[in-house]
Structure formats: C-alpha cells, structure tokens
Length: 235
Image 1 (cartoon, rainbow, N blue to C red):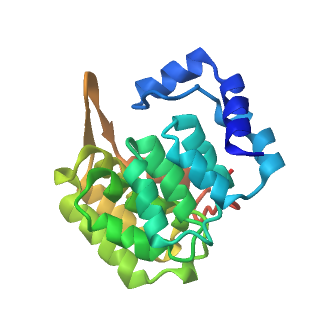
Image 2 (image 1 turned 180 degrees about the horizontal axis):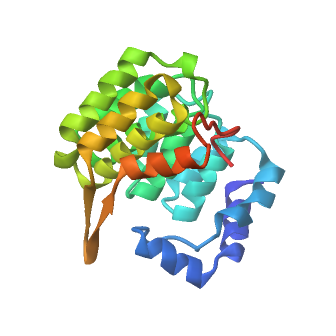
Image 3 (image 1 turned 60 degrees about the vertical axis):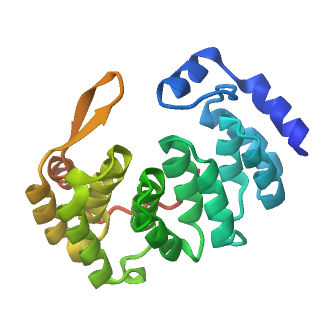
C-alpha cells in the first residue's frame, strides 16, 4: 500500500464523534477521527514499513501520524529521525503515545530520552519521561542502571511542582511506574511519591486536576500487580 491508499482507508474509518474527542484533547485539523483499534486491519496488511511511516507522519494529519507509529521500524530510526518526529508532535497524544512509544522499542531509547528530559522543552521533556515509563513497564530490571533511576527519582522530587504541565504529568507517571514496575527502587519510589504529594495539573478552560502517585502505587500493590511488565510496548 502507498501513502494515498492508506490515507483513503483512514479517511473511510473516520468518525465525527472520535474526531471531536481528539480535538478536545488537543488535536487539530487535519484529522479524520479514527479509533486506534480500527487501524489494526490496515497495519496487518502493511506490517513494518519505515519509509511509508515517515511519509504518513509528514502529512501532519493526526490519524496518519498515529498510524505511522504503528508501522514504524524503531530499530532503523536514528536520533535525528526521532527529533524530527518530535518537531511534528504538537500535543501530548503525539509526543507521549506515538513518538515516546516508538522510541521505547529502539536500542537508543535511553540516550534520546535523556536528551529530551534535559531539553527544557515541555513536550520533549514529557516524551522523555514517558519513554522511561514505557521502557520500565516492558524491559527487564537488569537493563537499567539503579543509580541512574534513583537520580531520576530525586530529580522528580526536586522539580516536579515547578515543571511545565505536561511534563508534570509524565514525571508523576514515572514515579508511579518505578513504584510498580522497577522492583529495586520500589521503596524509594513510594517514599518519593509520599514526599511529592498531590500534583496539580492546570488545564486551559478546564478545572485543575490532581495526580497522586503514592495513592496510585498503593492501589496497584493492593491488586497484587507489583513487578508488572507489559509483553509489548506498541499495540
């Protein structure tokens, strides 16, 4: 399938209600409003195709950009490729759920995520922290440096309340993920989450929401989910 054929299939799957939901979360035109589950049959036909993924991502169409993440080949993408994708990621559903997810399957994931976390740019920072969430929730604990993750917990504790809104949300999720999925630092994550307390997320034209990693960790522990790992990062 080529770019034109995929765009036609995506357009045919678009639903006005889904489109409105995406827009309410920050998406903007162009987009069709395709439910992610509805994309699976097309993905099965194409499998992995990095050149097509790059073409789709470059359209700026939200649904095409999301689908690009599904068929991308993270193993052949370079740091500059991921940076280019981040340049086009104009809101968190792209930065954290397309680019960060794709990066999490790359060998260079930690290196790129580290650069984004230190960038000072809200969505890059958010994507960097989110990438670690996807990594920790999927890869074995031995693949991570305990001292590095420990230092990152300290960074969250010291900077989360003064960070940009989307970055705050991703950092809070990092706290939660370390607490559940990275056993060597479970106790430290719990103590850090307790010290951080509720995190206020301010949103335009909406009431603030409050996140509490400590409570979220406790709920998962109560369900017996300590040590949880996903089989796959991408759907």
